[in-house]
Image (cartoon, rainbow, N blue to C red; front, top):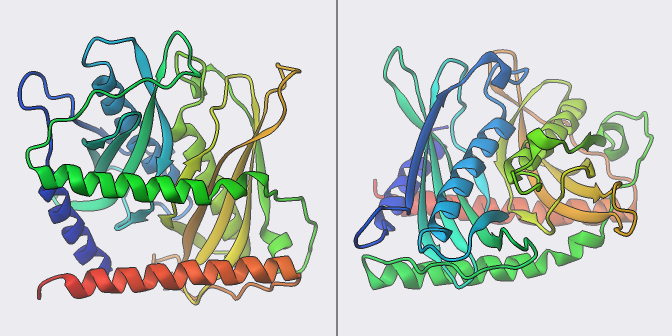
Length: 358
């Protein structure tokens, strides 16, 4: 936990170094919000659901990016979530604490907006504050008169030139990664019945949900935060089935939103274990949408991501994760791919820690 807190402080310093905003007039590049965490927000471990925090992050990003894209009085539009970069859960948030969500636009390309969000928990009794999450989200503006048309984004005014240069590097990197994940749109998670514990089929889970008005924007498309919350719920079920203990979200790999989902669609969120280390589990989650009210449209892949969970004892201490039993060649392949992602992120995290001045 001390290492994660050090990373949080380093990330906070990095965020301050990327302060941007319009030179004059109303500042549409920043947004802050807060709300108290209630019992309905709790998971079985007694902490706030990771999906609830992801939903708050997305809501802040949608507000700030939509405001910015409409700031120049051009054609009216709404900002749609396209991608969420890897997000680490640095510290648990508890019921009764106040969540402070701070969002800032840090880069704009011709057709996309980068939003960086920081979530801080506040114990209003003791006054203690902790950084719980930092996330980077990408949005695209869609015309309200034709939601299939992507509009141009008003340019952001940068305080320093290097902010624009660094932002462009992040933009090109995420664009390349999105292209590399297009193959996931054809992958599927088939129902598997396996009664042997610790196998992939034993813990694999699915959730089917009909998207109603409360899940969607005024334009009739599902909120990205709603989708992420459901993805986290399914991933949590998979993790709990495997460990048979309390579990908590540790991180979420990049979430890619491949296509918009309309109100009235039935979505199937499927999750399966791909890799386990001594103390963590990687769970692949795929979201498929079935437009049942439109007979001319076919089922399609809407979103995909990898979630990482840890197992907890009743007093909140980390427990060893039971090894995953892989059986087929395809399962072995996914396991090795997950192991490569795990080792890559472990090395990156260590490099960040080594770069922190002592």
